[in-house]
View 1: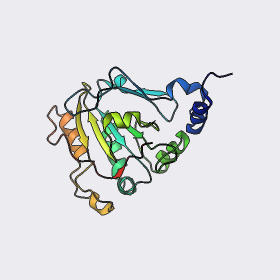
View 2: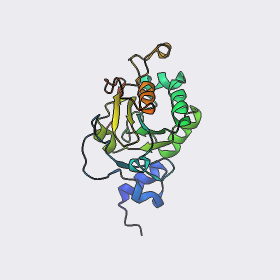
View 3: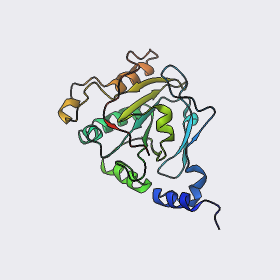
View 4: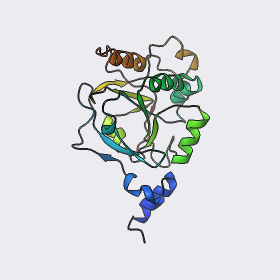
Length: 214
């Protein structure tokens, strides 16, 4: 008989991770749980990916990392996916060796919550290209990073320093037409980091739907 509590076994079954991933299903923080702040080291965390494996942010040291908080039902997120803007940025970044982690912090029963198989179906249907999709239904990592909206974007440099946090661009609307001509803060941050330069606008105010924490 498994020694995993019944409620936890049901959660694992619902996410599609299975009993083998039980030890990885609960978000964990490495070291002190300090709140994320631009200009300081990005807090390290472990989260289960939709594949069932754990993603350790610390293992990505030496790579530029993008963290994307998402909710597929949010009209602001839909704007960037239905226009192809988010996918294009993902392909551009990962093609240059950037690790792109899409994180879902919607709690069970709330808007945007998905199981692991459902998340993978969304990735395929939208032709998205993240390095991994991570599940944070307890909101532990989302709250650690202060993610308030979807999309909420973060960039971590190769040394593990958080160098950007905020909106994807400067057009806080749901209109797909506004993607064209927008100042994409994430792209600009990635270009600056790749060139070894400071990010010109390191903090902006994220816009979108509120993250659906429990």
